[in-house]
Length: 276
Image 1 (cartoon, rainbow, N blue to C red):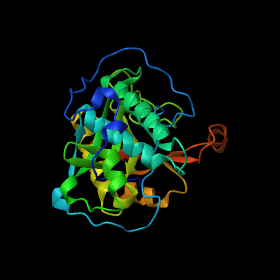
Image 2 (image 1 turned 60 degrees about the horizontal axis):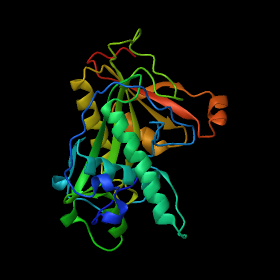
Image 3 (image 1 turned 60 degrees about the vertical axis):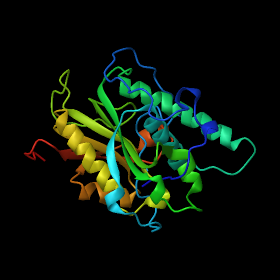
């Protein structure tokens, strides 16, 4: 899984456009030409998945205080962008590192807004789903940095993912079902899946995926996919628990060419009649 945070978000870490909480709602499904991302930009590639990367048990959460919902306001999307930066990168303390983190978060924030607004050709719909927890319930001390980076309003984003309704994701293995998928896309992919390291093993990944299935079914999705690294056994077990099964795997040459771990493609039937 990935990482989670709790604490007050310092205004110096926020872009000028979201210096206040509860800003405008993102308007979905605007159609324009996409901006093709480079291979090195893991945020704009829509494919990162870092669930369950360690077995460390840390903080136990009050499940009644957990909220899993679609992010619509900019401050929620900013908090999820900060969590992704924190989850998908390793940072060493050095001069200017906070500015670098802010730069990466701004890149992901803008890319997320574009995806949600529909400014990507080939994507019918994209949404960000967050797991959040009340600031008032977060223990102080070791989680101060998490809280500071990933706070919105009076809550902290501790898990996030994207659901992408489309035929394929750039530079990823393409799902085979349903056959003949075209303009009326009933296929979707999960991406950018992460849970704050401190909050892993609280069932948050399961909650995120379960919520994504509900959203997908509301969109008319019949076939849901997720890519996961071969060696990420905890993530594979989670997805299997959520009803995903193996469909195919990435050719070794492609993984070498893209300079990344080789991936599996897992599939879940949402139609109510499994045709595996």
